[in-house]
Amino acid sequence: MTDQTALFSRLTSTLADDSRTPLYKRFATAIKDAVRDGVLVHEEILPSERDFSQSLSISRITVRKAMDALEKEGVVLRSRGYGTQICSQFEYSLKEPKGLSQQAVLRGKKPDTVWINKSKIHCDAEIAEKLGLSKGSDVYLLKRIRYVDQQAVSVEESWVPARYIADADEIGISLYDYFHQQQILPVTSQSRVSARMPDEALQQQIALPDNVPVLVIKQLALDAQGNPLEYSISYCRSDMYVFIAE
Image (cartoon, rainbow, N blue to C red; front, side):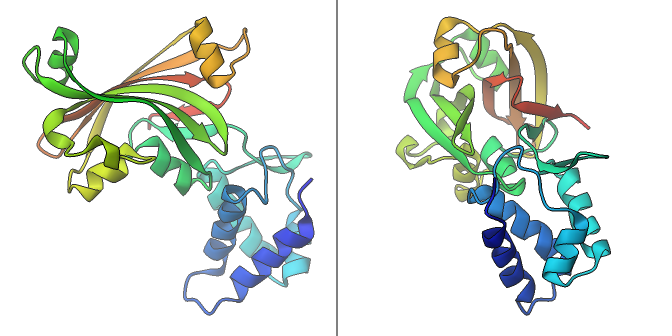
């Protein structure tokens, strides 16, 4: 159980700030920050609207608007008779031109990455076709294990034309953050989703139970001119992800 004293203290401090930001938005941000910092954990049941209202001296309408916003962002899940809880699944938009790390932060979660490979290679015919290159062109192969809130959720392989990466060692948690630092702007993405059972190596990398399939996401990111920036294949825990395409 969460230490509610710590949660309410954090909320009280945030709501007391002299800010023009609407109260419900500050409330929602404080909840997301509490999730990101580990004050609130997955599947944690939150206090009721009445408890929040009385303890923080704010209206229930403010609390409800904040919860509406958090539910829309996939941070909380509400059900009648059960209450409001922190989502254990991670909603990932296939439409947004944002990487996993950026989407995780926006939803109040903490992303991390363990790099397995960052190397320049000559691409084969399949990758060359995806990236609009000639076979044998230089690309960077980037392989990593992705974490959300300290839990391994996916293994990802990416191929990026070498001209877009000046120094692979400068890529931190997020490839898309690196892109933005280089003034490279992904605008659209094309995605294809399928499912399969994981092999032994994948089970070990993301601690996946035997009976849980993985979702295989093949995605091509493009800039405003339609130039391919990255082709990726991600193997994602189906019990941890909810993919949104609208």
